[in-house]
Length: 460
Image 1 (cartoon, rainbow, N blue to C red):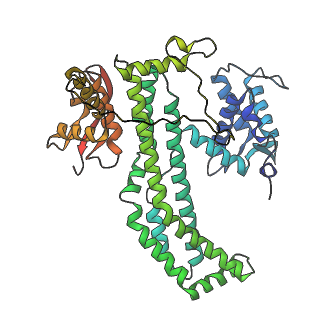
Image 2: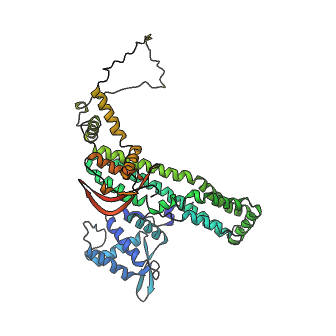
Image 3: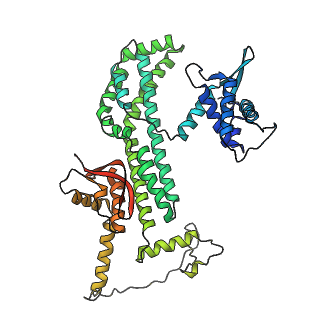
């Protein structure tokens, strides 16, 4: 098997680890966009590319520019220097066209890498709209003349859908990982922005919504599996397809040609059989992220004098302190505990004690009224933030109305503020009787400013 570096220049990634990496990345994108047109087809006049780079160096002040070999005082010298570096590291190539003209060419692997970097930089998300319907339509139009092409297209579409959904699941973990790293109250604004803006756009986008509703798996799964079974179970049809593969794909062995068709049909069949579990796993990951975010928000906003607030501040002191300089015994007693190894040959001696149980008496003053009220208040306070209670809270707010703006809610204290956040957080959870729709309107409600959103009952 060929090694990756056999397919591209061995120093290809060196520019991304160079002290000048930010400048190199900017210049790579400038070159890419300079030659990205139907007429150019990733091949552009060198002087035109140089001029675009000169404009960049004229407009941008570089804080750090490490000179390695050449003098790079003027913008033209810097532009030529960058082109030479990118050429020596295998990002671009040069071709003599005659008449003293030279073109800048991008390699195929360079184009793929730059496209990926551009997608990451602009946070472009995968689209799912019509993917399952497209696979269904392709298989529905199956005929013996175009059979190989139909199966190949259905295979590619299925593989692409699985890859996109796996990427979506990985993206959810990235947001979850970022939330767990936020440790300060000042990070609360960053958490809310990631949740209410970035996470919503990247996960609860219209495309994924369609995947769960109009373009849903249950709607087309049975029909797709039936179409695959019709092809796979037809012995004569599979024989004809295998023979067509021998003729068109330069595969001389009949068994290998049969395996070529069979493996693609099996992949589509197995993928749609397991797709339910993948989508369910994505929903679980989303629930995990929402729960972690809600817990983090409650943690960062709870600085009261009750037991929960005291422990929050205590943990914060322990986490932010330096173990070598801070004595934890100032605030709590820490002792070292050891357990016997279960693999040890030593048998611990135990003293036999005959226990005589005493009768348990519960008197009326076992828990006084004040303690009972305090405990009931704590239980009710914590249960008020559960999904069930928030669902009831929203139902009471709507009270027969079809929709309600969040800006209409009365936010008097911190508890109202937390409930407002949880209404948004739990809106996409399972078994909730309401949904939300964001509005492009910044509102101020008492001491809280946020982007307004509609709270709508399901079926509105």
